Length: 425
Image 1: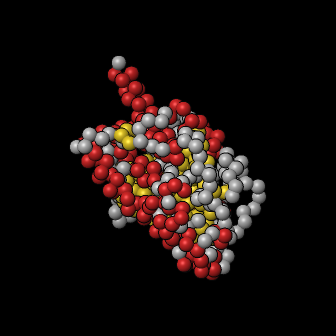
Image 2: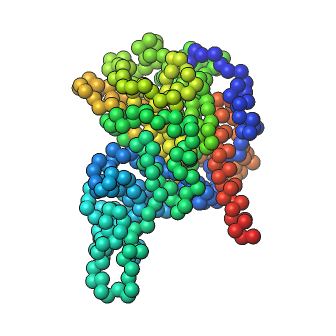
Image 3: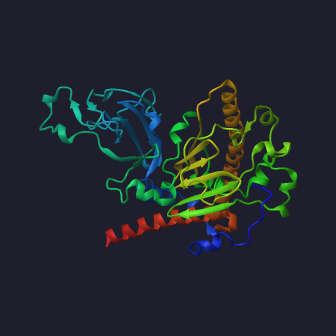
């Protein structure tokens, strides 16, 4: 990423004049009222990625997903015909949470033939239909056919399982994803099934962590171990190779020479020994077949990483031979639950397994550096907004995706507000 010519001022933003170039408001990251609007305008209307099809290997395989901002839980389950369906995780009798183990707020997974409520024993087939009511004769005109689990719109793209909490989604999943994302059709995500997962609760607005991965302007200052001192000099500049927008979604690509060609100060000693690190194994197994046109859309050479940011809260970072997944789940106006998953092709040797584990540990170190900044950012923004009279901040050309992201959030919220006004009228 370093050593490349710095683009002229406005070289990216000028391609998207609707974004403007002025400072942007950060009220959307500090306002409890705005958070409540996001719940209705975004998280109850957008398609949300909740998992992968590999989590559902056979008929009856299921997992639950807690979507706290929407105040709901969903069950995602594999049907006998191989399809995937989703339901609200609520028994239709007296509203007990249907699927949970020891703690009702924890997510669970397993395989079953039917779902049975712990409270009164009502049972539901995998397709959500009610098949058993204990002491059914005591109920008055109970229509079992209309008392099944409440379905949630569910669809799959490239093995990623999405749900939409809107009873009548405004777009199909493919329409929502649009051409920039669906141009990845055919990428072998399904070959990368060795997963390293981690999660954390962070004391910051969900958008602030997403912002940290939408620009690499911060890298020389925050990730000093990864960038040699010569590159950290301000006059040298630091930039990504490509930015692109499509609807509510974004992508940025970085240049990336092969790791073994870089100076030693770019990496930890263990990276040199194991030939693996922040950008994964130095020599991942080659992927078979022709890669889809959506990969490396800017035709960057040498290409390093594509970071596809799917609105509202998922990022897919594609490296050479593996990928990384982020999700940001809001829990309040100033907190969120962060999920990360590193996905490799299954190791064929002990050495490859070590390479994967080193890569995941080194990556986690850098993710923690980003996460460690966010509580300070959140508290300072709240103080700035409430007491210092500061309500906005400037953005540079390399922060175009940050500008676009917050503008998109505002547009969805404004559209929801306008609909409520029309209803009242």
